[in-house]
Image (cartoon, rainbow, N blue to C red; front, side, top):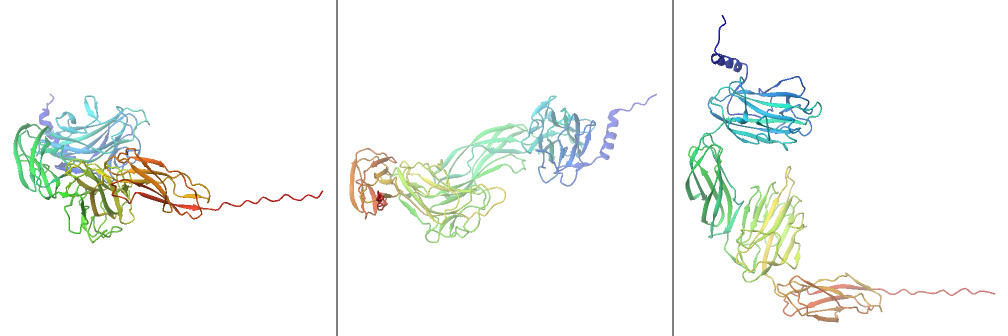
Length: 619
C-alpha cells in the first residue's frame, strides 16, 4: 500500500531545503552589482544562445551600466539572438517584518516591438510558485509599456536610455522567502535581434505604513514683492498617499521666516497610491529683505521627510523717484539679490577682485557676480533695483557701466517689470538709441574688454509708479567647469526721456572725394525722431568748412523712432575743402550732441594729358 504524504506538510520541508541552498537576504536591500553577481544567477530554459550575463554592457546602444561599470545584461557583447527564453533569479529575501514592500530598479533596452519582451515575476514561497508582478496590487511607475498575455512587459525600439521602474505596496504577507525573477523572451529569427536589455541598481524595502507626499504645482521659483505689501493668492497642492495604510486627515499650512502663519486640518480619505488636489490660501505682508516661505503637508506617524517645500523671496526696498542715480558707494542703496541656482554664486557688493573683473568703475564699490572667485556650474542669480516711480514719464533712458568676462555658456540679461516684479520682459519695449546693448538677440556674453557704458533710450514705462529692473546672470555649463571671471555693474542711471529729440542718424557716405572744379556727390542724410512725441518742422542742412551751403525745412509729421531721408544737392569742390557737416535742428530739442555729423573731404588734381606730335615724314 502506498503511503500518502499531505502536500501542506511537505511544503515547509521543501522550503527549508531550498532556502538552505540559496542566499537569504534581509531588508532593506540595495545592490549596484559593482563587486560581483550579488547572489543573482541566470537560468536558460532552452538551448539558444541569448542569456543574462554580469559585467559591462558593450554592444550597440546598451553599452553602459547605470552606475559604475557593471550591470546585468542579456549578451554583454552581442545582439539579442533567436528564439529563446532566459531568466535572471534574485536571492531570497526575508520579508517577515513587512506585509508590503517597495521595489525599484533601472532598466535600459533596445529591442523589437512585440518580438522581444521582458517581464518580472515574484515568489513568496522561495521559488515553488510564481506570480506575474503587476497583478499584485502595487502602484507602478514605468512598469512595462505593452500588455503581453494580459500582463505588462517591456518591449519596443528603445527605452530612451536608462530609466527607473518601480512598484509600491506589493503584498508579501510577512513571508521569509520572497524571490524575484526577470524573464526575457525572443521570437526573432536568428541574427536579427535588438541590441539588448540591461538591469542595474536594484532596491527593495518595506513599504512605510504612513507616508504623505506632496508638491505645489503653481509655486514660483522666487517671490519678489514690495516690503509691507500683502502677498496673497492660492497654492495648488497635489498630495498623494505613499504609505500602505489609508489616511483620513492631514495638516496643511505655511510659514514665513520660520513663523507659522496658517495651519488647517483637512478631512480627506486617501487610500494607498491615491492622489488628490486642493488649494491652500495665503495672505501675508512681505518682510523687508531676504525671506523664506515654506509650505507643508503632514500627517501623524509620517516619518519620511518629504513634506515641506520652500521658496525664497526678497522684500524690495522703498520707492525711489526718477531721475535716479547710484554709484553704490553708500552701500546696497536699496538693491537686492536672489539666487535660484547654485548657492555658491551670487551678486555681491564690494570691490571686484577676480580675473579681468578686478575693479569698480568709480570709487571702490560695484555689484559683481562672486567678487573674488570664479562662477560655479548651474549658477542663476538676480540683482534687483529698488522700486522706481516713473509716474512723470512714458519713457525713460537707462544707462550703466559693465565689465564682463564670460564664456558662451554664461550670459547676462537685463529685464524690466511694470508690476512690482510679477511679470518680466527681457526684450525692452524701446525705440531710439542703443549703445553696447546685448551681444546677441537677448543677452550679453563674451568679454567687454574692460568697463564700457551700456545705454538704451526711450524705454516704455507707461507712467507706472512700480517699475522694477533686474540683472539676471546664468552659467548653463555642465561637466567640467572652465574658469569664468564674471560680470560687474556700476554707476546705474535712469532718467525721463526727452519729449523732443531730433538726431542725424546716418550719412550714407563716409568720405567725399573729388577734383577741384568738379561737383561733389549729392549730400544725402537721414534724420530720426528719438523723442517721445510726434514732431514736424525739422530744419536740415549742411556746411562745408563751417559755411552753411544749403538748408531746408520739412513739414512732414515724424513719429517717434521714424526716419526721414533728405537729398540736399551737391557743392563745387575746391582745393582747400576739408569737411562737410550735415545738421538737423528743431525748436525745443535739448539734446544737441546728436544733431550734427561730419565727414572729411579729399581733393585731388586732375592729371595733365600730353598729346605727342606726329612724326615728320621726308618725302
